[in-house]
Length: 108
Image (cartoon, rainbow, N blue to C red):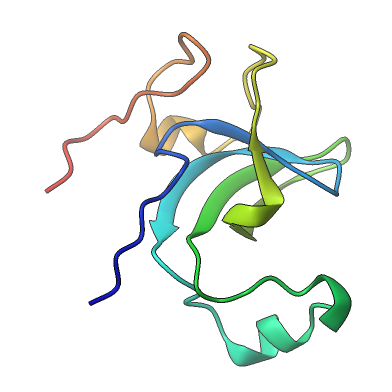
């Protein structure tokens, strides 16, 4: 049985360690759960290990909004206190408060 504990939680704002984007966590996979093509497209010298949590983010950079899939090793918590402007945040979360977004719905 796989035992993994995610470092980041739903609604938390995070930043990528190497690339200039940030986002809000909206889902977590306990280990890699994307396609092999996606994984192989990452340059081998920076390719993350699959046996760690991977996060789905409503992400933003200086130019656009998008959905990102990022390994835990490539994320850090964002303590800027600034909200994320992704237009889909309101579909999943309540208003930004205390550095995070509360869920709109109850999880099972």
